[in-house]
Image 1 (tube, rainbow, N blue to C red):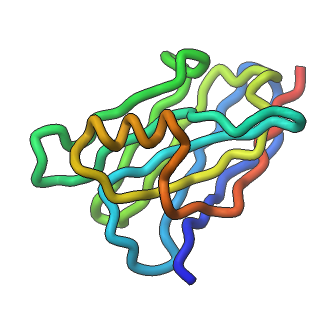
Image 2 (cartoon, helix red, strand yellow):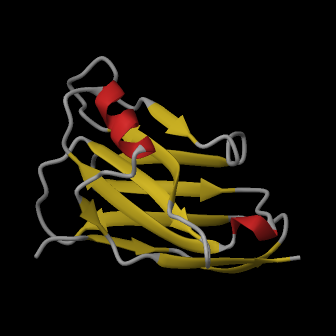
Length: 133
């Protein structure tokens, strides 16, 4: 079964940076990718999403949770079909399991809506990010 595969998690001190990567284990017909996180005892939440249909005028449209704006950057490399999450100025409250997901939607707005609803179809097993104070 094809799934997403995350890497790049680890332990850092507050103020530090990490870069997460995600690629599919096989071919997935998709145009929307996102990062999500879940802290112990909390619900899974959206971190960021990106619309990856290159032929579309809304290609590279991104959306972020308010809590990570100006600190995290999602990007997509179409040459390697990999999505990244650059995380700067990390805080202890960013500690969570980070998941990558992908899906196929009818446009950037639908991608963003599905991301907010955490309803993308293909998921990875997650990578742990721990930020110490």
